[in-house]
Image 1: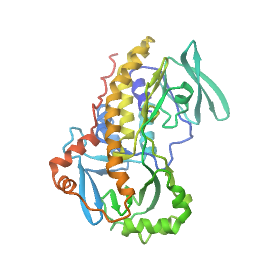
Image 2: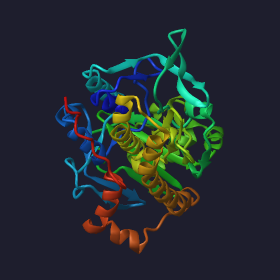
Image 3: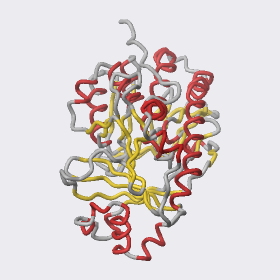
Image 4: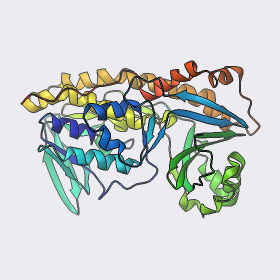
Length: 388
């Protein structure tokens, strides 16, 4: 959506295909980082964006056993908004789509699912798909695959994926929120349990980290045991865990960390999760995807407008975005192995080490992860609009 908006802003004729009839799907990534809001500000959209319902968090805090620690501080990031905004992804997508529709060369088809590629002489020249029961075939100078970690177009293109691995999955669910609840603690960790809390107005969106492939064992132990485990980790939930009536109220996110060896083929470019699936650690997935979109639009708008796109243009986009992706994934894998895996495999009380305790009490040290999470490696900036 963002790539389409940026390319249309540059005068490129764009068609975005959305497989569903709306954007309303729960438990999708929705942490909008300062790097993304910087992009929105550069487009002149920030006031309208912040007018939408959202929550602002300037520090990421965690409760480890009975100790509260600040893990990241965003107050010093070099961006227009020194905080993370939590906004449901359906609102964010609706916002971007609304802005994009103002450009005369932008078009959006809902209920339109891309199912395959049109190829000619070894080059991708379009897509096949289905829209409201009718099949279509479209030709284009470039197909951008942004269809997620299970990308159909990536598979159809035969691009090679390197599986980096993740030791956990996430179970997402919602429970009511009370005004008396802890408001600034996103992570609750205790004895083999790790919960993430995202504020959604009158309810919490909660993520429970579990060992990779462990949902079957949790299911076998039953919903009552699952509820008790939640209360053990976050006692303030005791009066409302019954709202999780069954495992039908729990959504499994199978965590993947992978990336394509090559993000493109002639006529095709993969971005976002289709090019590199990210761990949920740090909530960076959306923000890296938007950085990809900005880099792609900056590099490709001119050759697309002139119909002079060549393979080297696509290679340049990957070259620009591959290093930030590799570094971010390496940091995520390090945290997964050194922290998450140990927590989930330790059904005994945890002890906070001296290094973590010192970092949790130092604003200077807290700003290092704040910068890495909030801004990332090699942030992108929107190219100025094309002169008339």
